[in-house]
Image 1 (cartoon, rainbow, N blue to C red):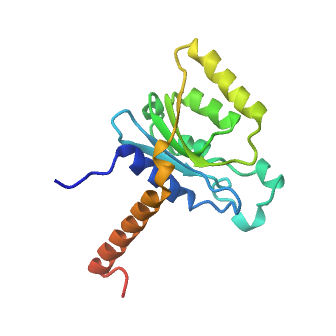
Image 2 (image 1 turned 60 degrees about the vertical axis):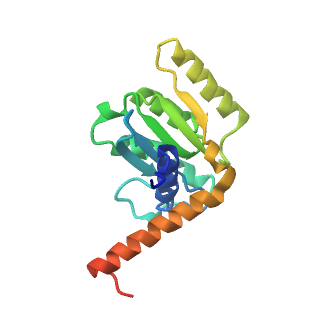
Length: 181
């Protein structure tokens, strides 16, 4: 019997693929949101507001902080049915900032799986604030379960999986005649 990829690996891998869409030269984050049945709900990546000309906006710190929309906010905004967010899981390539964490609380997301990508803008105070929000939210029965993604002990497995996906897509496109060679 063929081995089937674990859902957690699939969704986190997709979050990394989505992060490649970011025009931010220093921080590419991706977020995938799935429901309690592992059905895809939404995705997002760090980006400028929709319909803005990317070349006209700042991409350096600290100027970009005022205009760059984080992957988590974009994923929440991109959800076609906000009710699907309630009880959902967010797979994020790195730790959310306090603002994104609060938005996920508001959206009803109940689990966050955090990947290994670091963030230059998260301080110890930010981490304490996120923890405090989660503690106070737990009294209202809407605490978010925060989990570290453990599969990254072998990053080669993730990169190999990404390469195989890209190779399979190329083969299918060649067969259909959409690409040459």
